[in-house]
Image 1 (cartoon, rainbow, N blue to C red):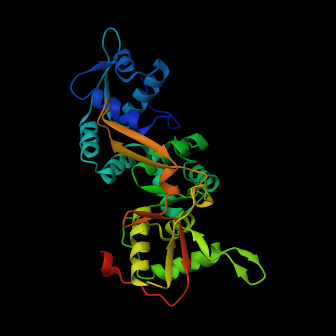
Image 2 (tube, rainbow, N blue to C red):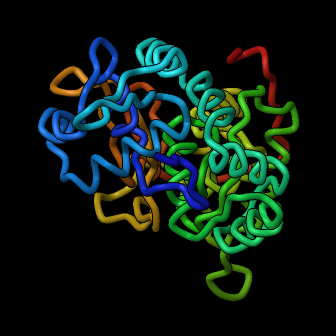
Image 3 (cartoon, one colour):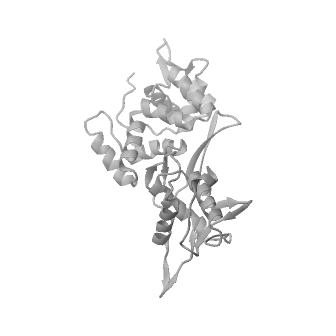
Length: 299
């Protein structure tokens, strides 16, 4: 059997993990995996083939059906999953999966790009390789990258960008004010929208700084605490537009039920504001632009 193929198969990260886990201690036939993981034959076959291609599983021919077992790479992959070392999981996939590796490299190079721009970049880079991309392929590996925290996607525009783990820069307050000004909408002559949606501020600022949403939340709360009276956090009614987003935030977590891991895709995370003393705030108002920001206060 040849495990080579030009495009990535539409396989979810959770299925790759479950499959690798199922074959960890004994060899399995495809039909066993179908039953154990409650998958259709077609879906099980696609997942098996992709897992073999990226060296999570090895195939052994028998007189009846091929059987599969977890490789050393697969065991390392599972250990990283079990320790919730998502960065290491991403590194393993980037090394073993030509499509995922090309995807994260392209996102790093472009710094931020919509789906169309990213697809054009990948098609150009892969022109003289055995591999190719289409929209589905980008979304598949993009899903892996988002869940592992390697990339983020602007929940309002769909742009991909790398989620660096570096600290928030010292000029965070100046960048936030720039974004605030860009998003501020005029409501008439000399009238401006003073209270702006924190989710929208977060998405644009994170894309610009290539920082995680968690890092933004921590920095914003610290900034407000350091500039009391100049910045104001405000709550919102239940039907506020601040809670609306075009895309959801994709996450991965260890499961405590049937499988090894569970994954969730929801827009709830992006539609939340920031939490302080048990209360959620969805809007930010700037009353005085003469603000300061000190990193040490929340390191």
